[in-house]
Length: 100
Image 1 (cartoon, helix red, strand yellow):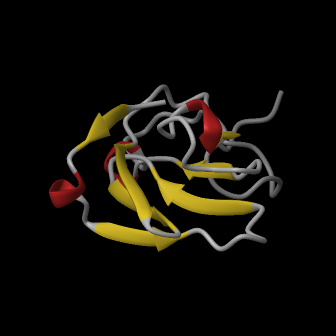
Image 2 (tube, rainbow, N blue to C red):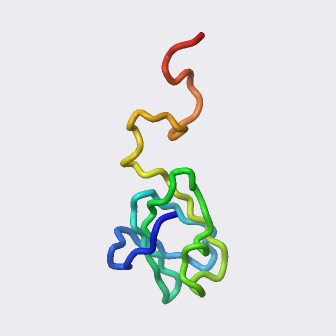
């Protein structure tokens, strides 16, 4: 899922409101999460097959008082490199143009 990061290393800040149910992040970014008067930062560089998880799994104890799902988009640095592992839109014909 990634690693804890210093708040000063964050390149983006997400304020989590009391009624927030989810946040959207992207692999490779460091995000500062602000919850009331508390905050923490996380570097999202976990496995590509993890597309969502509850932030309570990584937040320091007592920061979140409800479930907030983090939806993790694939790291753009690793997209478009020729691998076809299901990233992007679905449908629309064959991948290699051949039909048997």
